[in-house]
Length: 188
Figure 1 (spheres, rainbow, N blue to C red):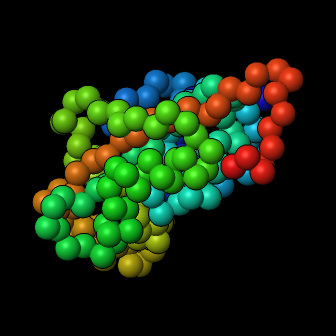
Figure 2: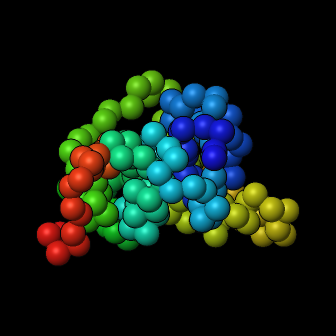
């Protein structure tokens, strides 16, 4: 079984675990994973936080698998501000799209969840832009010869995101099936 009942899935980000936990208001016992979650036990977490959720319906479905019934998923994403033209952000489409992503995966009671302290926003933008462009984040993390270019590109994208995007956060619940209830895919 996993040591923690809290999980953060942070694709692409090169930032350290402590910085990630602090930015996303998670406790020190929160497990952080950056790529595969396939080794983690189904139903073993009370809360799963996922960065860059909109373009990753598979990871949202994976969060459902990992959560215990009644557990909470928290999805964080960049949403385009009115009038912003940024192709990568068009895929995210905002809060309604995030709600759809959650409900298609099987979550219920999706509600916006505002984050605290705005001071952490710069780091949060880094993490979410890294999640949108995981290859750049990976280059930056390794001592790839193109690492400086990757950092420059990410920094430019982050600066652009801070002008043209807002931070979206949504929490939703994995249904707690009552004992004896029959769960049928036909009803979905």
